[in-house]
Every structure is written in C-alpha cells, then in structure tokens.
Image (cartoon, rainbow over all chains, first blue to last red; front, side, top):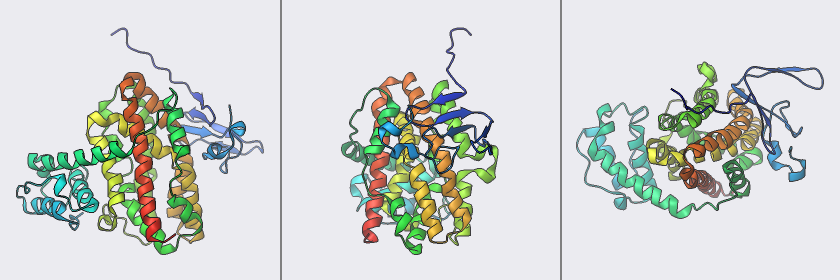
Length: 71
Length: 313
C-alpha cells in the first residue's frame, strides 16, 4: 500500500514548560556522577531542576512561576 | 465478588433481576431515589462487562432489558455532566488547554488533607473508597483502544503499557495497589469495598466506564485520562508523605511514589501525544476531549467536598 502516513515519533521530546521525554532504555549520569537507568518505555527527565526525584520529573515545574519554568 | 446491597428502588430492581435471572422491572433513571441509587445501579450494570459477580449469570452482560435500563441511567448521567461541566475553550493547543484547566481548578484536595491532617482511620476509609477504581486501574480506558486510528492508538498503548507494568505483573499498577491494601491490613479483593463507596466515588467509576464503553464518547474518555494524569503527580507525593506520617506500610506508600514519577510522564503523553494525535485524526472531538477533562476535575471535587465535609475538615 502507498500513501500511508509516516508518523513523527521522536526519541527525545522537549515539553514546553515541562520535562524532556526520553523514549527507550538509557542511563543518565547526574552532576555528582551517579548513574540512573530508565525503567519505563518513556521517561520524563526534569528540566526545571526543582524536582525532588532528580533526574526524573515529579511535576514540580507546574507550581513554579512562569519565568522559572523551562522554555 | 458478590453483588452489593441496593440503595433504592432502581438498584434494588436491577440487583433483583440479576440475582434471580428474571427480566428487570420496567424502571428508568427518573425512578431513582437519589444519586446513590442511580450510581450503584449503573455501577453494577457496568461491572457485568469487567469481572462480573459470582451470583450473576455471565450471559446477563448482553441482556437487552438490562441494557435498556443502563442506557436510561447513562443518558441521565451524561445530560447532568454536560449541563454542569462546560469547559471554557483556551487557545488552539489541546495540551495547553488541558493543563490550564487543571491549574485553574481550585477545588478541595483530599491529598492536601491527607498530607498534614487526616487520621489513620480517615485514610483507611479513603483507600477503601479509592480501591473501587484502583483495583481496575486503567481498565476503563482500555475499551477505547480498538476505536482509534494508528496515531492515537500507539500513543495510548505507550502509556497503558507502563500502567500495566511493561509486561511484569509485579509492576502492574492495580496489583501494586492490591499489595498496598494487603500490607495496610485492608481487604485487597476486587470490589471488596463497593458498599462503602459513596455515590460520588461510584460516579467517578461510572463516568470512566461510560466514556470507555461508548465509542461515541472516545474523545471524552481520552480528555478524562489527560486530566486524571495531570492531577496525579503532585497529589501522589502529598499522599505518600501523608501515608508515611501515619506509618502506613512501604507497599502502600510505594504505590503513590510510583505515581509521582509515572504520572509526570503520563500527563505529558496523555495531554500532548494521545489527545494531540486523536485530534489530528478527528478535530471535531476537541469539545468532547475538553468535556472529559472538565468532568474528571468536577467529579473529584465532588468526592473531595463530600469526604472533607464528613470529616469536618
């Protein structure tokens, strides 16, 4: 069949005002050298730096003033 | 699970018909003696499509007379929701609109109360009430899957796979809740606390079943999912801290800490990827998506209002 849609399905998505979504298995090294392995099909990495469960997002960006939220 | 106790004429007629195998009395939503009666009857009828009841013949799921009663109750409920929940359209981007609706919602919060003030007994009551849904967590939305095109279907399954433990039953969310209930000394059996659930909690369950089981309402189902996920991450942290304050076991705390992280992902997927892809396919569903989101917030506010008043907080 031809003409079927090809979907956008990026590996990394920067959510406006929110986290970075990461698809697939990855290991993230934190600023102190600690390594964190992803455990889900999609993981949300904190971009506001205020999460209590860094490097993962915990939704804290939503209670920050607009200017402190990631772009 | 055995059938629950009736709460009025309509639920009594439905339960009587189910238990005896007889045709239901000619009964309609207008005969309901109140919210408890209507929502219990509707909950029982929907449950026939999930795990059913040990004391009811499985074939009654598709009994046309029972479906006629269900339709009448659903129509009354849907009309009430459409009358009460009128979302204000915000911008063009559906994710922005859903997040804005959730942020603007200033209704009472059970998680905030549990965080600092609730007693052990009140939290046990809340967990029992929540168990009616949490022990079938995500199941109502699974009805929507075959109604979708490739884009929204793949997006929904990406979220649901995580809800269902990514293939590992030990990480499946409704199983995590059952383990938490058992560790907390509560009954982890599916449906154990239906008799204790107030009408407001049954309405929350019923709306998900109604949106999921009616293809026409698939937009509302996914809007509801997005608002549910978008109001879960931060409240789950408060719940976890409240449970720790009251010395609930780690399994129960763990259910909520899992949702802090999981739902920080899921809220983005639900609002952006799932609802976004749905509206790419079917732009005319936008109003229903926002209706679903608004209904989710409304029904949680009603349950919170009811319980906080009961607890005189």
